Image 1: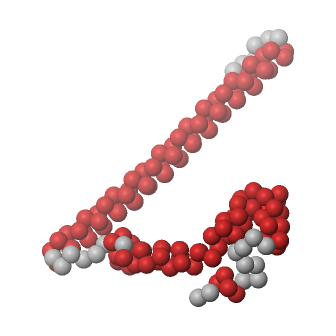
Image 2: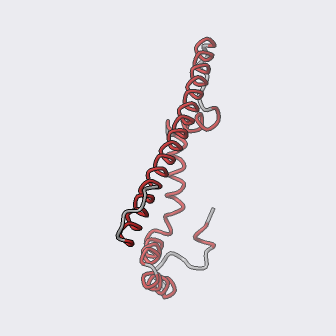
Image 3: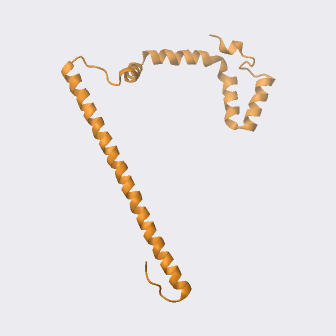
Length: 141
């Protein structure tokens, strides 16, 4: 795979790359920095990518990530334990759903409480405003 060899702009100090780098710094400085990195290390990107992929293939984390992505939790081979774990996870998920519903109910309660308090404050303001404007005390609502 020869990405840099098929590019129109080679990673070297040519008038085109220097012009693009300067233009990148003028427009948005990270673009100029990216162009500078390409000029300096562009011919090594392919090897760096290959090395990174090789390191990932040999990493113990790769297997763990793949296992989590495919099955969620891996089976242990002990049927009794796996069944117990599935039941507990299902129970915990049901508890989580109950807690989420309770949270939603409480949020609705707080919202209604705030609305009632705001309405009370507004009514008090309107009563005071009417009293101050007429000079006499109107009957409270």
